[in-house]
Length: 242
Image (cartoon, rainbow, N blue to C red; front, side):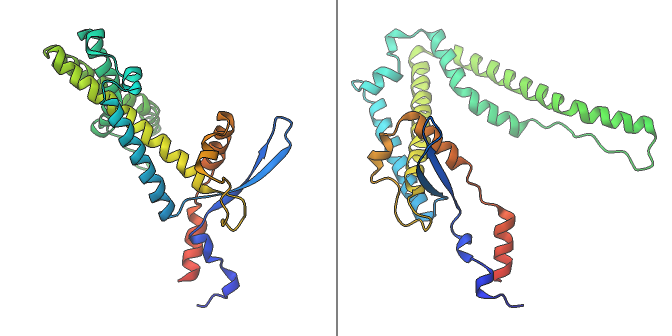
């Protein structure tokens, strides 16, 4: 089987983008932006930028004299043992929640045979209807037990040990957020172009993007998040080129 060259645009295998209009409060189009999914090179640039920003914040958070440390992490003498335990539990909830979805196993209802009685089919449907609630209850129980176990383990620790755990959790939390936000910021900067060929970047510099109004940034983010690689189309393109 042969395919004419003009029948398939193989560039779609490597670039996926869309056109986005920037409008003002009167719905007047101020500019057009061409957004694209990042290629590997730009993904690496965004990743490196995110890691550097995270490292920079981590260093500041560990510096007792830094402004970031004063803002985000309470001093040892200004927090009680009970408050430290509450902080540790609160910042551990995401990990506990993730673990619950891995560890909790609720058996799915078994579908009756095709010739099963109406009563058995009704029972099966009831079990199907109840299944989401059973999962929810099992996850809730797992999380409650995990929190109780964590609290019990923390209650026997010294304030110094509690503070170290608190500090480590907060540093990790804020650095993760910094890395994610920084990656998203660089992703948008690298993913916006003035032309449909994706040759000329829309922003003259990253600083220009950083200085955008927060609402405009949100609009850019919303538009970029709509980008999605339609796997069925890519699959057909791939099959056509084999």
